[in-house]
Length: 419
Image 1 (cartoon, helix red, strand yellow):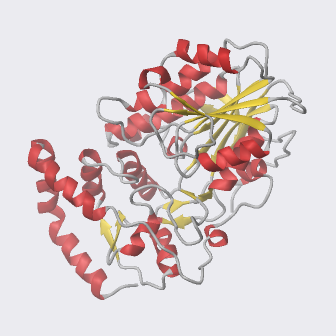
Image 2: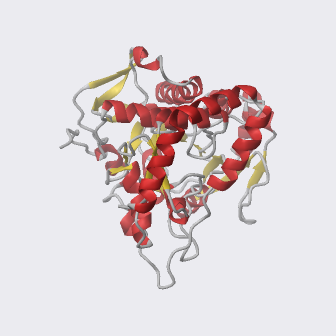
Image 3: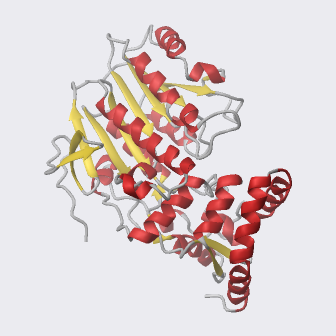
């Protein structure tokens, strides 16, 4: 049973102040909160400009469609030539431009000459920094440069929609609990929290959503592909199904359509919103995999991968959802038995009942198809990596010696006694 605030979309009734790092950021009960009001904007009969930063493959088309349906003129900011529809208005930025406030100022000045409002939706984000860059370069500096540039605009209404991460909510506030968390995981989670707080306290009205696992519609009638390596649907192609730790950590899958609906509904109110974008079902890591196996009428043969093993692999050879922050948070959730997060604020922003995975993934006549598992390719990357990285080789050999017999025994058990 969850204790949630009564939420009126125009006049939220919330009953406890929220503090993060000693700063008052609004009112809340158990992660359900909406913060600071601003000027009411009447957007009827306005030419509205919306800029989308980042190229999140499965989310951007949904944002684009929703924006056009609401009458926005949409521009897509790209770092590289992503495979996007030809009819999209695309503007290519060099890497350095994303971090340059003056470049954003010049761009905004040009693009708003005939605009009556400007909104920016930021989807830029990475779980692991590309070579030669830090996570701050990807997850923090671009949106904060955008924020500083927007502050210079005085004549038209402004909005920001920011897709953050549930990691910012789950990461423990108590510094004592940070000691055993990987430095890369801390950098990711604290960076996300930092950006959320800066945006929430800025003069620009902002809607911040914190999703975890995002699921999307079936592609071309048959393909289920949520877009990241080590997503649970990929495990349908495997004989054995590895889970991190016990596999009992909670997830609340959120439908991309609900996420985007909430983003626009939030931006079109006269308030700031900082909301955990979580779906109506709480499913463990193991149950997420089993959900897709059930669609194929296959048994689950789960093999528990110790946290220490997962952490070493994620540290040296991260791939998709197997990243330092996700491994660290799964360990934290397992050790502290976190309850599911409240959905009230998110559902209020969506404006309707939240959609479950079973509502979307109904088996077609010809059956589903799935992307192949990343594990074979990942093993090749690990083997070639340890050949050139002595530190990685040392740690991989250490965990193999320590956990190898356990993993082999459990793999054999799962193989011959599926559940």
